[in-house]
Length: 453
Image (cartoon, rainbow, N blue to C red; front, side, top):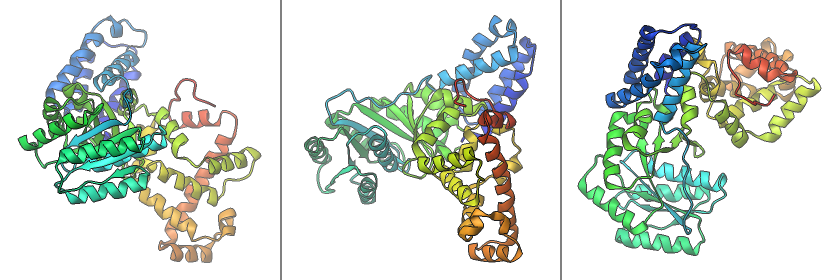
């Protein structure tokens, strides 16, 4: 996510933080670097200029030049303004209405509306303890109706049938009546999309909005569309009283232009972002955390929240107790860690949240991929319990058997054992007092204030 922008700005941050002196000339030079990075990331020209104007007001005054640490002060200004640019603070859904609170979801065809409805239902049920109903008002695409029905069952939401022969107004009224009788807290409404914006679609959605009178109207944007997505949001915003935006496919968007532009262009907050294909891959959009990640400073707070939500606490406690008692970290523990990483989006997603990771070379980042971890899991699964507990037993003939059983080669088994040895050493460091702090320092990262030791 935002790889190209992060690579450009994190190198600028690294250079600036070490500068003891800044003057008007090198401030302007730094501003030009920021401008180029934003434009290359597909942020709209007007949005870039608006952002730079705000930075310039502060950066060209005494705040930087008169500072004892001018480089760090300039970086802080860029971070503050980037946060403001994307919305300053996170804005979640409002539930301040008589239930069921109706949330209308709109967007172009293929933007991920139906999946977003299911992900949002999952989040509200699992994390907000809400009872949720869903209904599809996409009478033009029968597959969308069936898709929502299947997804509703998967996330344990109440599903209300759509009769394709009925008028949309009847479907809408029936859904609201059934949702009230079921005592739903929230009713999520999926709407029809089109390949492009047209008057008929806009009139239909406006009509649905009148019937449902939703408290929240969310516009779903495929972030990989770049500036086209932002322009589409502007058009929808002119017809519907949008209350927020959901960015989808953000894990595949290396530039990040849409994310940085949509808030400034529409004036509506980005409320959620889709970070992957799994049903749990919908996160609250935190501007301050995203700004920190873009500048290469990591996002440890989001990482902690993700650990709380997705990590198997019993397995984590088991490893912690072993380390505390001085027992060795074994291959079964390593296999459990690989599984936990998969639940949290894989190693690349984790690296994006850790401070200091942007300093790693491209070759190292390329090696740290999820295909490699899946291969490692298959290799460990081909071992006996004794081999997992005592890896030193794994020699020539055992390596051949394990490689054949996992569909890999002996070199892959050797690579796993080498990685495991490194992991074992790291776990040993973490088991000591102040281990996490020392480990993060060794990685070149910075812990947030009040981070638990």
